[in-house]
Length: 334
Image (cartoon, rainbow, N blue to C red; front, side, top):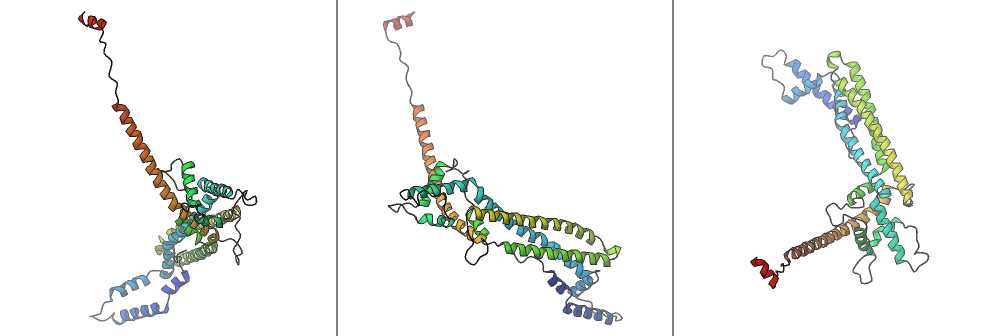
């Protein structure tokens, strides 16, 4: 998460620091010393502004709450965006039709290539670290890799929209996988705990301001802050639940692919799974784009040939045969 979570303790120090108090004392002394002078020197605009702020009842507490309110939406949205991306990637890798079809082809062609080996030619599955290595498996003449063959086979036999603008990439986008590989559940939990702590502090500060303010200066601060706090609590609870659900989905994905934690790790991290998928998806998409262009050219050539044959057929015509016998000539005279 970006460093946009408000540190309320820092804000308190900002608005209640000793230097500011000393400056306010100087302004007050200046006002008193010039109160009875005919040619009193007016305050500059910055000092006038500071004096006006100081006259606001419970100023530091109000600023404390308003600043947190102004940054909360950005903070919670940032967490929400990342959690949604992680959830989407987990769901696609586990149950996406295109992903399952591609993995099925990898297994089928791998078993075919190892057909002469009883122990390796009848495998029921494979480990994920195989995926980035498919591009390194070459044909006997070194003209094609196993990965390029799989991509071409998938597009020509599984994707009805291949070679068209409606063709959809079957795997998660490489950029999404890269971002997911950089995420850590501990970071999410820490950020949400920090937001919860700051939200509680904002609620407490709102109560203090409301209790110390007169009716004249109570609104609209109290009403707006109460609305914000109600909404913020709901949004934060939703994100905490979303995080728990996403973490559960990731654990299920780890079990689905039989991935074990790396040495020194207590549990499987997003980097362990998604870094492998990122490399594979990057290679796959490069070949997928090239094959789609090739299929598009083939479709265009086929369409041009169909049009050409239709034109040739329409240009060919049969002239009717005119009768020229005695019977026909007699018929013309009658």
